[in-house]
Length: 423
Image (cartoon, rainbow, N blue to C red; front, top):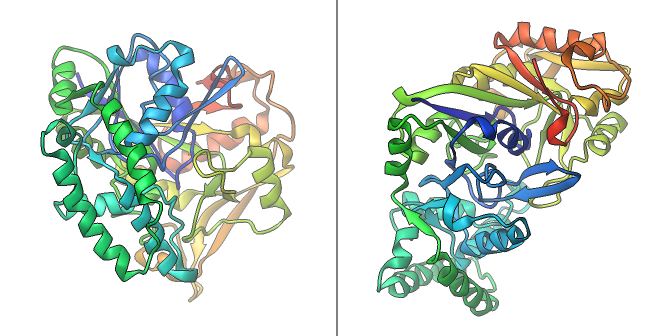
């Protein structure tokens, strides 16, 4: 059995959580492979909205096992709050949530470092969520981080204090206030005690054993491909590998065991924080798009930057991930527009046109080259079959499918589970 992978193809916030929730009944296991509490996966069903930050999006399906893989950075405080917030759903966490002992732990001083680093950048801020993600991945690469398995060791506090002293030295260099540390540490150690009661496992064996026994596994990514540490718009990226390769390293699964790759994208584009965004709209159209799509971060509440769909960026993500199926989200947000624009190329400062994401795009001003198509300008609230879509929407899907060269198998026309139309 091969492991399928689901990931975002833009700058995050594509709607991955909803798609995992919809697809989950087809799988036995949902496994998260990277990121941390900076990700917010929003699911909506029975008229109630739920936001998950670290727990895989299959958690609401009682017969599905959920695994937090080694590639994730975990905040015990956030995880405890997340679990407590889901108690009302009577979810059997002891039965269906498993956490890799090799996942890295976010400690309180990681958050302080995050804030110190961001403050020092002045007006060149990256747009960090200040959740401690970057500093934690730095420690992981620097081989000084704490991992989940360490909390079971008798000398955990000694290891913790050694790392904290290292962080304090850095924070003193930035003259950063750490007066809140004692309070943060109390909450942290209370959460660690709770953490020890969960299922802490060698998840790479778990995932591979499930595949070997014929179980169906879905790997769930966080953030988006254009925020990948290697292939995103560096340095305005996240700190992990958000692409398919990250599913292999973040779960311990061989590339030969990758099956379908589901690429999620919005019918338009959004981005949170700083960084290049060629199709961004700074006008009333962008504001209308933001309002209609309720484009505010599920983790931070920050307003998202909005713009028209960007085909060169999508083609790039499809290429580096080997996407086999596409899922288009939030088509209903474009209901309000009589005309819709599609970026097909970029015009570079020298006047040339390209349809590729080149290295220079990170530094140079580029102008989007648009194709304008008719909008459908009608509500999709009652539409439950693809054939009943307005012709203009079907034409939009057909055009994108032809340009991208990958079938669009799903179109979402609203936030609820039921507003997901399969083709």
